[in-house]
Image 1: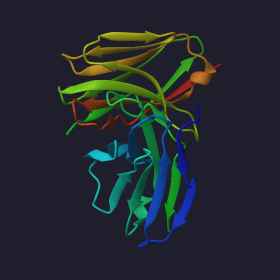
Image 2: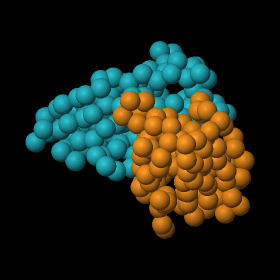
Image 3: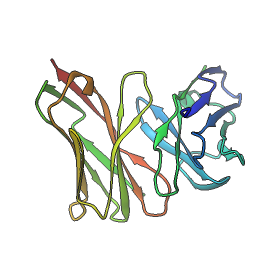
Image 4: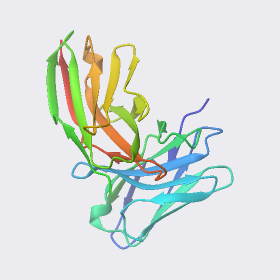
Length: 113
Length: 112
């Protein structure tokens, strides 16, 4: 069974641009959650989706948005990029609605210059 | 919102010794407590989790204990091996919130 995949793995963007990151969960997993990892702030929750519905959103500005498709694949978008958005963005999937973040993807390393 | 504090930030042990990492949480409505291991340059890996209706859970050399009254939970690793060296994160989730709040991480180094 293939693991959680994320594309792209690395990304360099300029301040003010926007970016879209993609996450494909393990087949059959309907819960996808997103996290931002930085050396200063650690791991922070961004959003969680289950069956195309956003069930919760973390304490991030409205520039951060996401969605989930009917095949459970998920995307997150960051508009008007700031230097502080540089981070490793991780997604995770879970089989049931009772657990969270069972399996993480490898992450997308975003650098904003 | 939920706040999770994790201690110590770094821990160095000799191979074969035990290691204990402790976390405290602020919201008594939290009911799910996973632990993750993240090796350098790799993704976090769920190693064990516990729910609020259970006081202790074991999986081979790893165990987690939960004290709901004191609002703290701990990870115990016995007979540590060099491959246990990594950063360990605890997390907590409030019932129905569908969001994880993470501790700041513990860098465990097992000296051969």
